Image 1: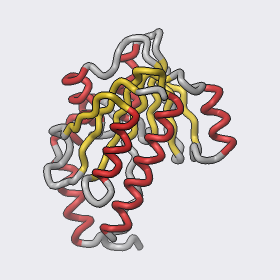
Image 2: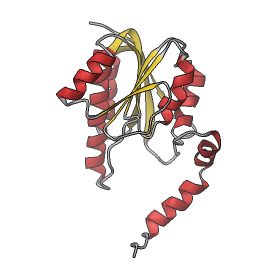
Image 3: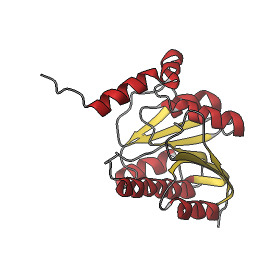
Length: 209
């Protein structure tokens, strides 16, 4: 017999089902509502261009890769990474594993050599424990990993888009991003829930020291 849902999970499910972006994603064939965050930022900032090499960190279930693939065209590439397995997306190269591990890093080095990417995307978020301080620390850690990855893989002048939860550590993190990129802006897409502290950091013109 299945365990009855808690009141909070039942409420979350009802809210999720009623979410207009969830409904739109199903209608348009996208894997997640998060695609509309990237779509809005792209339409505002002309982020994705034909011929680009794009790396999508924490890609599963694949909504961002799905959106990016047609934007970069036949001459472009989308390389997706996640610890979790992900059903294939036509034209997207997928590497499953933790990019901190040597074997996975070797696969990445082959697919995206240092200094060869035009854009690194990261919509990574930690598994939520419910302990705010711990969750924020985990989130900042993922942002730091994404920044380190971007700095290693991006071409001079390349761009980086990362999800950041505002709170302890976020201002220090932004200072680190500004050291690596000439232009850093904050975006809060409409598909980001208003009560959520999440924003997206758009960093452009990667400095190569």
